[in-house]
Image (cartoon, rainbow, N blue to C red; front, side, top):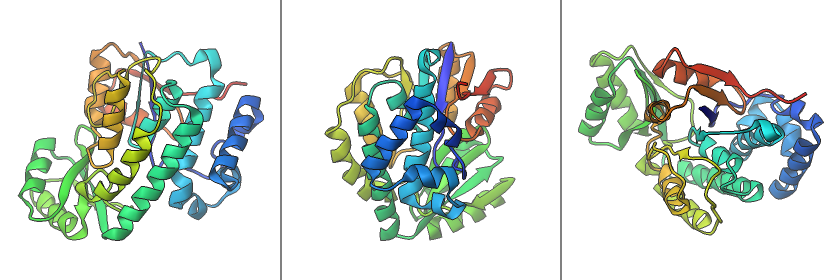
Length: 294
C-alpha cells in the first residue's frame, strides 16, 4: 500500500517549484494562487532570497503550493491508499486527497500563517529539539516545570521537539541535559507552535475551518493530533482545529500507517525530511520523493 506524506514548515528553499511551472496544470494553479494571495508568491518561490522565503506570509503558502501543485501534476499516477502531513503539511494532504478545494486550502493556510504570527507576537516563546531520550522522560520533565512547556513534535524515536515560554524551554533544556539527553538544542523559530500558547491562533482559525467545506477524502488521512485512519469530515475538522495547540504525533502516525499496511512512502513537496523520519521508525520500508512528470 502506498502512503503519501506532505512536509511542513522548514522545508522551503529558493527555486522551489520552478520546474513545475513548465506544466500547464501547475502554471494555472500558480497564477490562481498569485491572484488569491495578492502578490506573486511564485516569483519569490522561484527566485527569491532565503530571507524572503522565511517571511511568515510566504513560507507556509509556499510549502503548501509546492506540495499540492506537485500532487496535482502527478495526475493518474497519484493513487494514494493513505495520506498524512506534518503540521502545515496536513492541509496539503487534505487538498491532495480532495477533501478541501485548492482555493479553500490556500485561504486556510494564509489564515493559519497570519494567526500564528499574531500569537507569536503576543508572548515571546520558542521551541527546542531534544535528542536521545525516551518520550516519557521528556514528557515527565516538561510536566514538572512551573512554566508553559510541552512535548510538541514526536518526530521519530529519540527525537522530540518541545515548545513553550522562553523561561520554560531554558529550564527544560537544562533538566533534560542533566537527565541524559544527547542534545537539547533551541530552534530558530518565531514562537511556541503546537503548545497552549497558540490558543489565540486556534480560536482565530477555528471559525475559518468551521466555515470551510470538507468532503470525505479519497483515502484515509492520518492526522497529527489523532494519528489513526480518518475519513469523517466532522472529525477531520475537529482534528484540524485542535492541531495548532496539540502535538504533532508523527512517530505514532508512521507506526499506524505501517500497521495498516503501508509498504511504500512517497514524500510530496520540498525536501526529504519526512523520508528520514520514516526510516527512523522502520529502516526496511521503501521511501522516495514524488518526481515531477516529464
